Each structure stands twice: as structure tokens, then as C-alpha cells.
Length: 79
Image 1 (cartoon, rainbow, N blue to C red):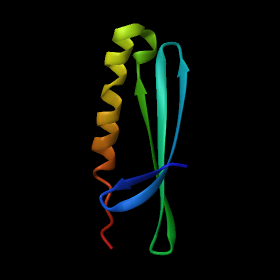
Image 2: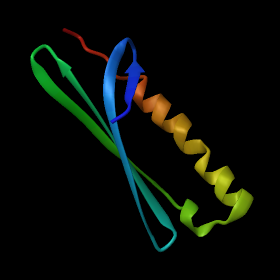
Image 3: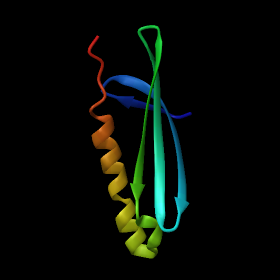
Image 4: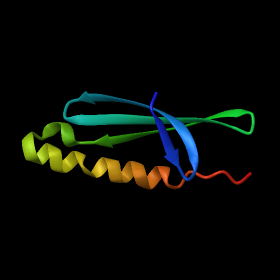
């Protein structure tokens, strides 16, 4: 799995997606070993981009990386 640095910590990332009837679901799962524990944070983003083609599809899907970055930038350990 690829490693991603978030706020100074290195996470393993697993991604997968599904589609049905014009709807896309992309799930992101971040795992880290910290303080002798394995911590996993997962979230799914649902979009209606599957109903678009060409430049409309590109425009719709380019918002998702910004949303992922917004979510992951909030990851932090308090202890």
C-alpha cells in the first residue's frame, strides 16, 4: 500500500471505488501504528459524477481530491 505523510505521520492508504446508476462511491482507508495500537480511519465519498462524460466528468471528479485533503488535514493525535 502506498504511504502518505499527513501532519508529520506516515499512513498506509487503501482506496477502492464502486459505481452504480450514475453514482460513484470512493472509499479511503488510512492506517497507522501509533502508541502500540493500530488505528484505521475510513471514509466514503459519494458523488453523482458517474452520469457525466468527457469534460463534465473531469470537472465533477476534480473536486474529490480537495475534499480528501480537507478531511485528512484534520488528522492529529492528542497524546
